[in-house]
Length: 252
Image: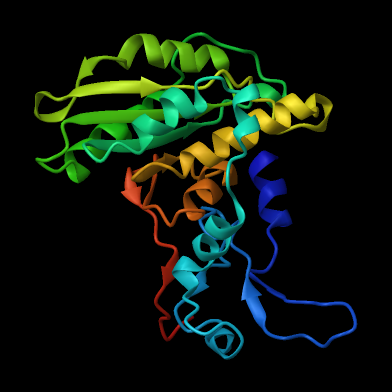
């Protein structure tokens, strides 16, 4: 039912720019479900060519990053919800000598599933994929590996931190695991409050501060976070990089 409901709710991957009192300017992409594995509404390279008339230089593959990187900037007050944000987490994510991989794992804990302190099969797939990505992306100049692990399960984050922090990564470099104190209550209105919203937005923002993202293919929280920074996105099923903009085949 989860997949069916999500598939049925997938909107068209285009919408109108509408300004009250003015006619439609141009149709623009909707990016939220562009990576969604069950959707057939992909973005294609010949879509939205007329956007250039209104937004010169617009590129479909970078459109969301172009917009959101301009719109989002963390307030200094964000440290009220994550005290280590500016002093510890962000400096490590921005370290030029580190390969930074963000990993998003949703357990459905916020949707009523039982909390677990064990690494779930989906979680292990995500971590195994991250290890594979380490070998593919790390350059010889990068002396450290940093994982930014985000999940709706605090217990799972703690277990990943305990099992993988300060362990040996590819080529013998050290792997460091970063997590926030967020409770992960971002998927249901029953948990809605300022603290939950702020923690979730910070987590979402931090996913986009990596070099590459590993995200579950059935959740848009991780993929939209990666789109904010135009990051390569690896889905965990086959640990392959997702394609955002597809080439049009004749049969399409």
